[in-house]
Length: 417
Ligand code: SF4
Image 1 (cartoon, rainbow, N blue to C red):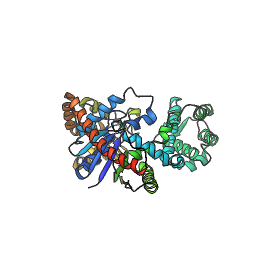
Image 2 (image 1 turned 60 degrees about the vertical axis):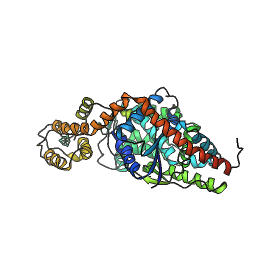
Image 3 (image 1 turned 90 degrees about the vertical axis):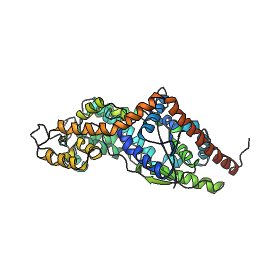
């Protein structure tokens, strides 16, 4: 049995992507380990510090979502980060011993910046009626670039757009906007639109929200979250590995400087949910393409009917290809093996229509969500009782955090009050 710690930012109600990416894993972990799961409300402020109106409600929704999915306060300690002020104290002390370069070189900081900029560029072009094709391109980026004539079509494969921006962004000398402009024009986008987009990127407000000390230093807060409970293992996706490494480095540095207090936690690598949104892009609230754990039957039916299918299958009599169909991807998680195999065969022979196929899926998603909905109703009837569960968990966490801080203050020879 290991001491495991994991948290989630309260940014809104949870969807199926959260369930299969995080909660499902937590349900297994709480059976085998000493788990602490926390609502990372301070972390939500690192890039959403302007949007605090909904924070309390988001925390409430998170409490309901976790408990209705079966996260169990009898098996794990559930708490709210900002209720344990010791996290902030330890983060402050860690910030004294953390070299700035460790944070600036942190790849996830750069990646987040990349995503923000890229998303802006993509949305800007889409807003200017540039057709961004999401199907895989016929040739590699380099081949396409070699053949490109610059003839203005105002169409581009998403993959080329991403690759072009990737090369411009991860440049040793900083973002190479000049090169990006030339390449996008060469690939067929209108010069005027490209110039406007790049100018906005260079001079506009994109990325400003993460240009704060809080954002840069959030891995230090994360290290404090983990080490204050002397957690031995942290379930993370691959993209979070650098953060765990940083936590280990901070623990090492503290132990060397003062006293051997902190264990070096290991990363428990978890697979990221591959479940796409109903339009095929990453499932996300901002794309408006998510199926929420709180959606009712009708909403789920409607969303499933809107799902993208094999784009080549126009009529029911056309044979389909389940391998490129989102509905089929969902079946893998919600439908039994035999039915999946039948759909696979029948789709390829045009013996099943997409509407019928979607009806089966909607029914199965609803069957999966029904018990969660039932528990949600129960919890909503007496929410204060369930909020109290988190308050009790926060007290429990605070007692442990407080003991660690006594050790830390003593090791650092700080003033004792
Ligand atoms: S029948 Fe099902 S798997 Fe085949 S294309 Fe239609 S929705 Fe997709």
